[in-house]
Image (tube, rainbow, N blue to C red; front, top):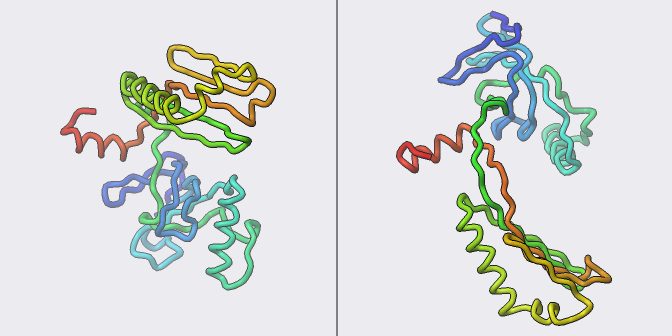
Amino acid sequence: MVIKHTGAAYQYKGMTFAIGQRIYANGQSDWEGLFGVITEIRTDGDKETENETADIYCSFDAPVLPADVTELEERFSGLYQEPKTIEDISLDEVIMAPEMIEPLEPWTGREKKTVWAVAVDWSWHGEHGHLEEICTDYPDAKRKLTEYLSEEFDNSTLLQWQADDRYAAVSGNDSYECYEKEDYQRNQYHICIERKDLVMGPVFIREITEETGGAI
């Protein structure tokens, strides 16, 4: 059987694979890490392979990050024992077994939860650093901000900076910043609480539900 109409589906081990569905290639495939779309599904005598499962044809998106391109090229160069570039690697109509891909739920309709990120950025004589910690409750985030800032005042040069005319200090209910006026990138410290939306995928929801006994 050949399945090629948009929305038409194939069931396998409790999973649904549909034409037009976005998918992700997992670690059982040479195309691991790529995102794509299902274009056709063939079963029984219409298959091109001898796999026991259906042939699922996928068209993959070319990786965007240079590091991902390099990794894919190195992977296929190793497989074929000769140099391969992204242009040499087939991304369209790639036949995959169901175990090699994971269907992706659409973005629309996904549950979101508000979380609070305590973000810290600093520079010291031109050397930069960043720290971010996510909290599910605002009081926890405010507590973290208070602890981080108190530690900086106890163990760093922030007090010296505040007393120095070359530096400026600005603060709000959920933020504090101190920086060198003439050269912000050289010496600065900034901490704040940022409100963010956490998009929850089905696997995350299932795991949290199991851990909390049915309540998120």
